[in-house]
Length: 131
Image (cartoon, rainbow, N blue to C red; front, side, top):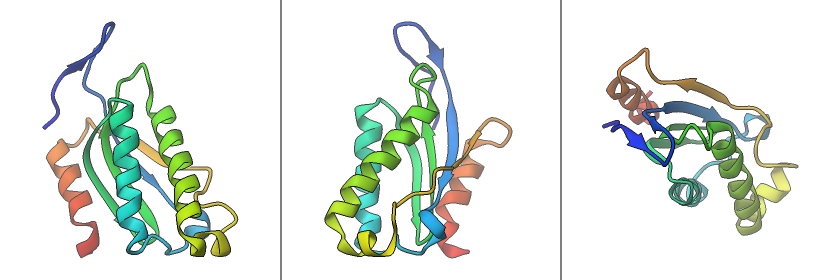
């Protein structure tokens, strides 16, 4: 599942569990917004050379398990994902503009995945909708 990756300077295996929420934790990430959001996140990851292991969009938050080059950094990746998705989703879905001043909160949760096996974290994210 997690391969050793490399760039010109670094050989790495950096996986992160990231969670972020809409402003006021509103349940606005419903169909068809959730599908479009996944597409935007996957596009940003592909452009930045990040590998999405698992992604689940809940009505009021997002779980992302992603591998990213440590020289690029998880902070830059999340900032790009949140920024682009906020801009595009608010342009495409009028309800998001009327219900929220901005789409995302300024904060997010991130943890390196090393203590628990990745398959356990992946299973946890996959089962979020069944809880």
